[in-house]
Length: 433
Ligand code: HEM
Image (tube, rainbow, N blue to C red; front, side, top):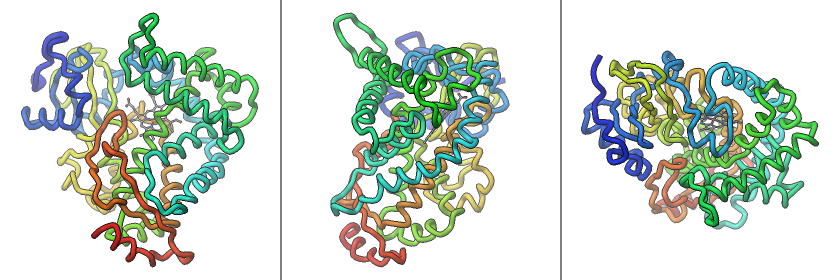
């Protein structure tokens, strides 16, 4: 059993959190270069931490050794969202997963399809109307917010615009608590305390819904066997939070960028009519630009990862960007090659970790895939699009979700009725010269 490469440094002084949070991708790339392997140790949030950037070691932690690497109940997620499945372990986590997954994949999901289509239609139908460039990230974030508030709380933007607006603002304030320092100083309202105030107001709205609405998700969730009386409201708070709209906006911005312009015309045409090919494109988008940087676990006993000794109490994080570019599994790892999913990587979708993996994978991935497919098909069937202006700084940032540092702007042009990309030549000349 070998010692982990790198150093976990000394308390406080050796902490590398600032370096990591400033630019997690440069951080791990530098370390890979230095240590010559895809698993190393450093100090994060003042804890000795194993960083995992290989497919095999990620599978080992998330699947085979999931009982030794568990969720951290003291994670910031608990202070912001309360006790939810995300930071719970053992039997309670199993019970929560069973209950919530059955709801998120069963009849409720089937009955949500019409609503999902209607939100897509409403949010995407006017993209070309003004002829002006659109910020895809903000547009899809709005679509995602309409989706989660309608699906999980029965609050529909077109029916209750004021309540919708109020909840959206509260969710934004609440979200800032996740990314601000957790300090609550009397007479001085930090981002964190504002976030907690927003949480209180959101909880009041959610409890009112739970008491009075018989329909939809809210109606079903209160009859689930959940561990404690506030479980339903805390999970609703999690599901309507800004996390899901931001993750959707991240993936769909990357999709739009990957397929923008005249030189992607054939790719768009093929994706429009070939479901398998669209699926391969979406896999490739999440491989190269996973919305979340990764996930964190705590070792509850001495263990090993990739043959290295991991002492009890160490934290371990998988870095999805690094895992998805592991050259052991993905040839030409930095290239956008949807064809790999019907070639060398066919049947290996489970090796991606954009939705986690193993027994603690994402329970919302089925819903997410339905939404992603619906949005992508709507765009492909109705529009040609190109970057506008054609030259933009597309350098990505990776936190809190991956997206270009400066949200890109795109001009959408309606396809003609027959669905052919007839107008592409004009657009291409404008955008790509
Ligand atoms: C683009 C959309 C989404 C992405 C990228 C995403 C990503 C993830 C990832 C990476 C994890 C695992 C985290 C870890 O390993 O620590 C996870 C877990 C989870 N996700 Fe998602 N998710 C998305 C949408 C959703 C939706 C729509 C829901 C619910 C409605 C949801 C609910 C959850 C829950 C409850 C967990 C925790 C599961 C557990 O700890 O057992 N997610 N998600």
